Length: 388
Ligand SMILES: Cc1ncc(COP(=O)(O)O)c(C=O)c1O
Image (cartoon, rainbow, N blue to C red):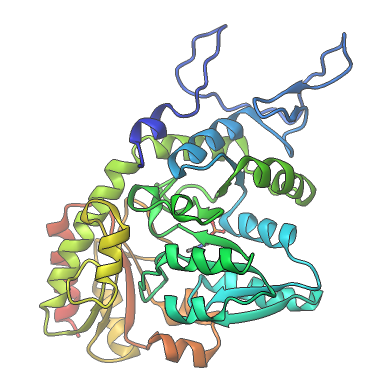
């Protein structure tokens, strides 16, 4: 079970000398060796503490918290979500392997996977739903990469079923849990060996830092991925680790409010004559409602709502221009509500046939619902919808 206490106290940091309450920013690239032994001091997981591309106490504190809240043995923090994902790919793929990527994943993850072909990696795309992914996992599959809640059409994948198919075929399942957060769902307990996050989103939660994390068992993290991060040089900076640590102290509060606001907005949009379709797994009629209700905690369904308005690109542009409170930008998971136009943003790099199959149309919008008063957001949406 996710525990906010872990998000607040999980760093287990205590400085005997000062009694400092908050983990300091260890803005030091190097650490002094123990002169009597000629060796480096060790971090709590036995790694040399000598150079901040390898190990840093502020980053380490964040990793302890993240491992606890996702229920893993250990974690690593990276300079971005993409740095985390590319490090995992680099560590586990070679010219004989096949990677299976779910049809609907973050555009840059898909691009990265497709570009691995130049190293001889075979890339299989399967989905968009659980059944097709499960059917496509084969003996030769080395890695399966999925997102718990897909973007932008908000399909919910049945992670336990995918994890079983991966176990049966000796494939390593990687679950991107960015959209869901451990507050709603923890894939590790359902048999996924590795979880990644763009911590840029809900984990940090304030639209002021780019960061990524990977969580798994001690062996994978400490003996495999730690070295790849060191070689690739993509560790998170101490200052950014401090910001993510601070964000995590309010994770549950924020996620609850995001979800409450999102539910109210999904219901408002669902009843609006200028809205053709609302894609939100919290709505009882949504195709993914049952699986979401089963997997996600406390009737929470995420802070993102996608919807299709009446019309096409012209109407979308008018709608976006009229918004006053909701801002237009690519990211999600922060206090500010942010609207994204997928065909020109995240889905712009997606092959057109896949875009069409997924239903990413010219009138589709994705709203990352923020922490504002929901009445203000609804008023803003009403005004913008009236303008089209
Ligand atoms: C689901 C998901 N995974 C990974 C990423 C990449 O993370 P970052 O932008 O922190 O590199 C994103 C970014 O939007 C994302 O939405």
